[in-house]
Length: 397
Image 1 (tube, helix red, strand yellow):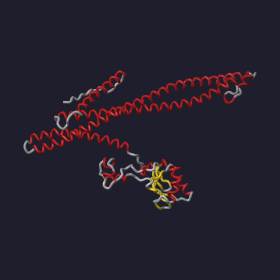
Image 2 (cartoon, one colour; image 1 turned 90 degrees about the vertical axis):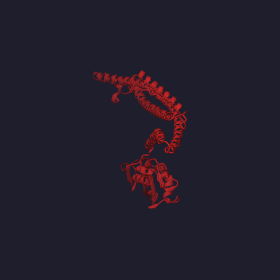
Image 3 (spheres, rainbow, N blue to C red; image 1 turned 90 degrees about the horizontal axis):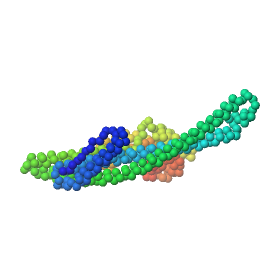
Image 4 (cartoon, one colour; image 1 turned 180 degrees about the horizontal axis):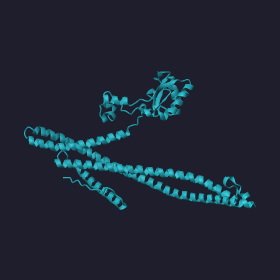
């Protein structure tokens, strides 16, 4: 029998010592589960006792769960370190620019202080300092003090900026090093996870074969010993339940990833109408310029841009099925007839136009509308889909 160990971890680690202890516990937990997973893959699912198969499935599933979580932690550490490094680099650039400006100001104040060229508001300090008029004494003193004080403040500020730059530079280097270490750690964990997932798939496949064979045996045994057949079915149902649970969990993860990776679609609020063509507001000005330029060259272009994805969703529900998976994830080839997933068209993002020339479709590469677009559209970042002379978008898709 396989032994599966659990370790209760503290809910919150407050001190550095507690944090270190928490990491030690996590590492110990991972070590124990890795050992259990290694034992699990050695189980001969086809011939092992029912209990061993169940424990093996539980152990390998738990190991994969843990490794996925640890990989996610490592990837989050990389993202956090990269963000810190980028912020430090941004602050370094700000400091460098501020230092240049302040150096120029300090240089001008220093020249003015030592040469007496000018004071506040362009005052001639040389003339004031040489004047015998007693009424100018207080004014002379205040101007000299102002300039000297400003110079001192500027020098102090420069010193402060230089010191801050050293700290920020060190922070950037440390964050960059942490990001690199994190990438190495994430890659190591990714390799471990892939290996465990492959072992998991092998064990599940073996368990599936066992399930088929044992259920077939139960069907034959039913006629002679219904009680024994029922026991077999009960045991194999426990195995089947674990297989289904893991399959459902994997499907949920893949569906969540697919949703996160869905290309953004525009909403009516994102759309502007430019000379009769609906496009995303972000490119409206460019489209207007392009159409005006074409008209100046004697080329009359129009067309269709944005298309609401609700129609595509309706088609997917009709041709592919009504579930979340059917609409958003099922491959187009699995639908009858094949139907593209919503969000795949640049039209749904408002970033594509199907052009017409003098009101007619542009169906050939010799069409004057296509010729003009081919020579000029790149100036406004529009690219043609080669198989469709009429279709132009910001990506060529």
